[in-house]
Length: 64
Image 1 (tube, rainbow, N blue to C red):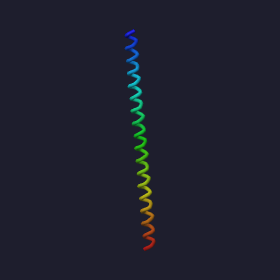
Image 2: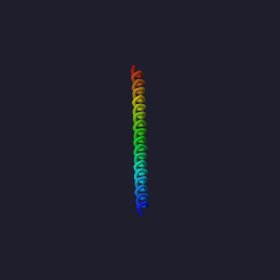
Image 3: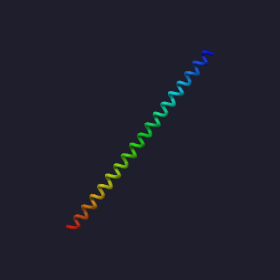
Image 4: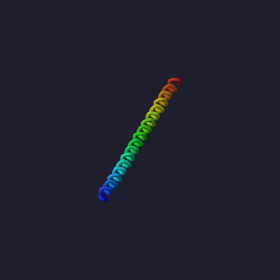
C-alpha cells in the first residue's frame, strides 16, 4: 500500500500545483484586462480634452 499512498500524494501535489498555476494565470489575465481598460479610459479622456481645446480655440477665433 505504500506505493498507492505515494502515488496519491504525488497526484494531489500535481493537482495543487496545477490549481495554483491556473489561479496565477487567471489573475495575470485579469490584471492585463484591467490595465487595457485603464489605458483606453486615459486615451478617451485625452481625446475629449483635445476636442474641447480645439472647440475653445475655434470659439476664441470667432470672437476675435
